[in-house]
Structure formats: C-alpha cells, structure tokens
Image (cartoon, rainbow, N blue to C red; front, side):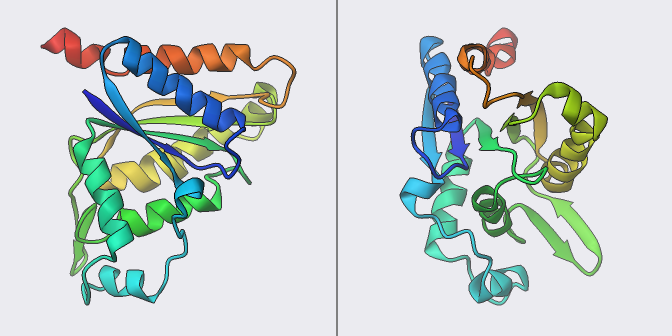
Length: 198
C-alpha cells in the first residue's frame, strides 16, 4: 500500500517535518511505501488565482501544477496531512493546496445546485501540531472546529473518509519524543485494517 504524506510547513527542521518522516518510517517498517509532498520546498503556489477560478467555472482545464498534485493523490491508497495549527486551522500553504487541488470536476462536481462527491474511497489521516495544551483546545472547542472545518468542510464534502484525526498538543514543550513515537505508530498501523481484510 502507498501513502501520500503532505507537509504544510515552511521549515524543514520543524517538528511537523520530523513527524512526517516518522509516519513514513512507520509505513516502511510494515512494508508500505510513501511519498512526502513538501509543499514549501517544492515551491507549490497556494494562491487561488484566475486560472483556478476558470477551472471552478469549468471554463478551463486545471494548470499543470494542480494536475501533478491530483495525480499524486490518485496514486495513493491514503492521504496524510501533517501541519501546524495556525489560527485554529490549516496554515495558508496547505489551505491553498486544498483550494487549488480539490477542484470542481475532480474532487466534486457542482452543477445546477447539485453536488456529486467524487472522492469516495479516499482514506485520509490528519495530524495537527498545536502549540497550546489540550486544556486550551478543549476549552475553546478546537476539536469540534477541526471536525467541522476540515473533516466535514473539506473531505466529507468531496466524499473522502477521515479515518483518524490527531491533535498533538504542547508541541513547543521540552519533550517532543512522545509526538514522534505517536507519528511512527500511526504510520505502522495506517493500513492495518486493509491488511486484516485481505
């Protein structure tokens, strides 16, 4: 099985990148493959521009960079997003990737008031990296915000299934080792259900 791990962080030395590598290592330890899409290093342009608007209105085909990302997703059996929580949501780099790549005609069909979900069968895992502690996020309802904004607002809208949604809190604390172990374990069990069914 193969996973596409999308990293939405500008710093290659960040905990976010280290977590993505741990997921990949966990997958490899179980005989699975993965590809890490480092959006910042690859220079992905997250700005939704006129070309993207034309795609949404079905006036043009998607630009080459969007087609490349869609092909990466299509090659994967699971999609893993690893990202820092900025302003209670995805960072702009990753949000722009979603806005441009999950386009009308590919992720969904919207026509005359009807939406057709085109990504049924896609399996998604979310790993949010938070600076605050669990209590802060619970008090302010971030778990529900994450569910509504990301799980429902993005993936359910397209028909994809979010199998796990992990918030690793207190990421700026002194001990990040538990987070790295958690990410490695997630990679190890990412396709466990698929193997059990085989």
